[in-house]
Length: 163
Image (cartoon, rainbow, N blue to C red):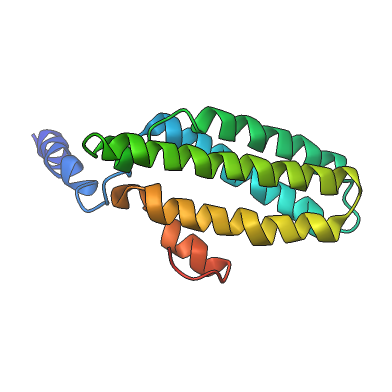
């Protein structure tokens, strides 16, 4: 009898244990989110290599190739914020999103050239300058507010302000 009461109590309380936990964040467009995560990870890895004078730049070149592939994939995907718009604004905003991604590709070519030349300083200028700026501008314009979970802290951590 006592054992049955304990089991019943556990079964009653168990569903409540997770009730206070915040719901898991689910991006509106998981396919685009995956590409953006790939870009973020590859850019962080590239920056780490570029800032380490003892790290061979070949590793950074590998990550830049991953970045380029992720951008090519991402530029064909409609961001959630753009998908919610009505025509003709949706087409106009999607073209602007694609233009932004094309600019990112151009800067990745500049980054790749700097790495191929062995010029860490020029590579860092591309990462901390135009690539950073394009990321901020793109997120401000195209990222849905509900997909910004966790982004604010990341911007502050790097001293770039909020986004």
